Length: 104
Image 1 (cartoon, helix red, strand yellow):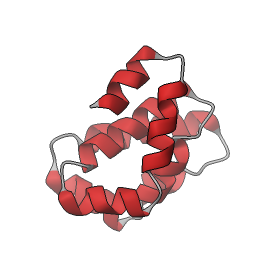
Image 2 (spheres, one colour):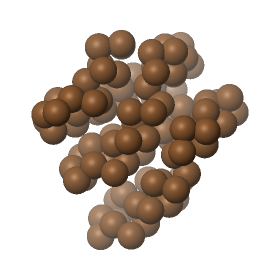
Image 3 (cartoon, one colour):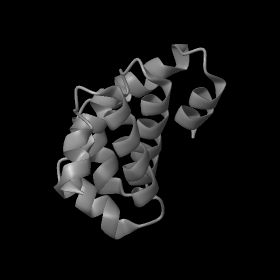
């Protein structure tokens, strides 16, 4: 998981997209993986991906944060990492799927 979290900051867009997609799926309904992703430092680079030019990376980042936000502690960590403003900023995207994801 640490390697996947590190890949979220890769200089290669495809690597960022794929690692975010994998982490999104790992965090789905799995409290253990959510904790592991958090412990590996996954929140800050995920928040950074919200500003990516890649729609796939943005969607995956939103998915990771959605999955992690089911925990009150991790919700607070997302806020402390500055995640609220970039999430709200995604409402200006032309992508309706992204809007729906952020609204959840």
